[in-house]
Length: 221
Image (cartoon, rainbow, N blue to C red):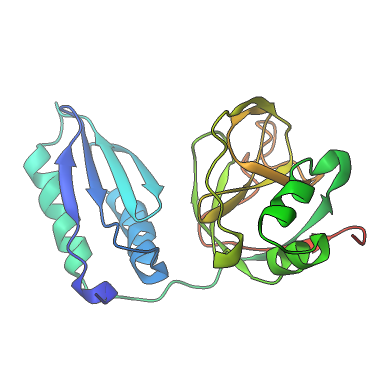
C-alpha cells in the first residue's frame, strides 16, 4: 500500500483527545511526514492545546469546552487528504558513540547471537543515516528509523531498572538514545556524551522530528 492510500484510524481518547493511527505493516517516511505536517498545522486551530506526533500516529489534545470534537476530527481528515508535500530535510547531526566495554555492556553478546563480529555490528549500526521519526516516551528520547534489519532484536525479557543516560540502544526494529537514566529492556551497544535533554536550554530537546542522525564510532573495536 502506498502512502497515498493509507487511511488513518481515528479514535477518541476521552473527551479532549483524538488519536490518529496510520500504522501499516512497516514504517513509512512519507506517512510520517504527513504526521509531522498535521502536528504543525493543527496547532493553529483555536482550542487545540497540544499535538504529539509518534511513529505513524498523532495525538491531538483540545479543550472540549472551546472546541467540538467533530471539528477536530474533520480537520484531521481534511488535512490528511490534502496532497502530499515532501518535508524540507532536517539537520544532519553526527553523534559520537563509544561502543562496547563498560559503555556498551550488551555488545559482545549481541554480536555473538547474530554470528557477527563486534566490528561488523558497529559497521552496520553506523552505516545508515537515521531519521528522527518522533521524540517522546521520556524527555528528549528519539525514535529513529533506518536500522539495518539484521540488527533488529527482541527486547530483553527482564528490563534493567537503570539504563544509563546517553546509552545507545536497540529494541525491536529501532535504535535510540537514552536521554536520562531510566528503566529499559533495550540492548545497550554503546554510549554518547551528548546531552539529549536540558531544561535550561532554549530548546530543551537536542533533536526534533525530521532531524537526521549519523552515529560515529569514537574508538576502534
